[in-house]
Length: 513
Image 1 (tube, rainbow, N blue to C red):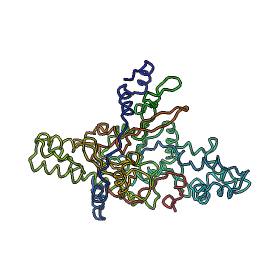
Image 2 (cartoon, rainbow, N blue to C red):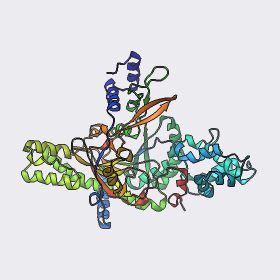
Image 3 (cartoon, rainbow, N blue to C red):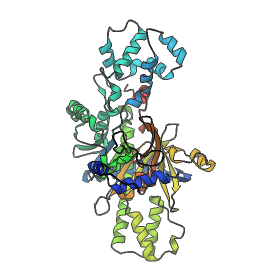
């Protein structure tokens, strides 16, 4: 067992990390994290719902009728930096020297398709006017112009877009102003998460970016509030230091920095379950910061969100009634079968094969456990080659089958049967969740009780030339919600519009007009 020095103990105390937590993480490194066991891909009518126009309308009406007596929150993971989005531009600045070759020669030499597309669509980027004003008259020719344009974007002593949080970059050009994802999320919230003229939003950000977000909010709030007739209540939080994970060396011993201190690393977006656990709203909409739409797609997006929320309210109503009935000890053999049927058909809960052989008391405890859980309604879009996790039925080491969002890194690619199941997937996860985190009494569940800690990730990295292993916590919509009751619903592809690279901003879905 690892022995901690007094310096280690002091370091753990400063971060708010228990010694036992570190020991458990080191044990995970030693045992490894097993691949998930895919049972089947979730597809339409077999794990994924698809509603008719009439059904969608009914669910929207359900939400509209109830929302004014509910508390709503939009929760947006927004800590991602923009550096990866500009990888092609950083590479270009290193690889191209306008004094030594022309652009044509550069493209012929490198086949740099990313920069070719960037150059071709230059005037369609929302930051084009801003950058051009700053470099006006500095370029001796168009080849040097592109180089200076990119340099102005990326240099630390210029716009320094690579340092920005992705949420504060210009994404959409409205002519008189450009809108950031942060602004678009506020506008979006006014369309479906507003009650009595107020919309509540919570952004998880990096602490170093707080001043940038508050400055942007100050700049846009008055204009946006007037345009949407909405008072925006915006809050921020950071990943907690206590969610950082220990790094180990190749022998699974704690990795130490040159000063002898323990090396901890951020635990990934799964750490945000702690932030989410502090929110008290009746309905929580979750969506990533870079997934925003232009006005042409806003109506479809709004209807989709309201549909998902309406479904949550519909199943919650039944689940709450059944949970109260169990607590009131008001059960018959028929009502127990009714509750089991609801769990299986409406909440996709699966029971072990020998459930019928359990005593009545044990069956009641199982029903009570399975119905008293947070509920998530997850939008799923048709798979058109975008990267991201997918919806699957999996079986855990206790032989319990459940619906989960699984990443490809969790799947054993050397197992042909598992690969076949992966290839049968028809949909993928756009991170479009509507969550109910309270029980029928209105008391919030402790979300930390519903995490599958065996769904994390171990990655290999180096620091200071030394190899290390890092532990990423179970993803927020993956293992961090593994024991929630889960419903997957097909949503329109138009609602999924992420920006992973700068050239994604050239897609028609990010052009305002």
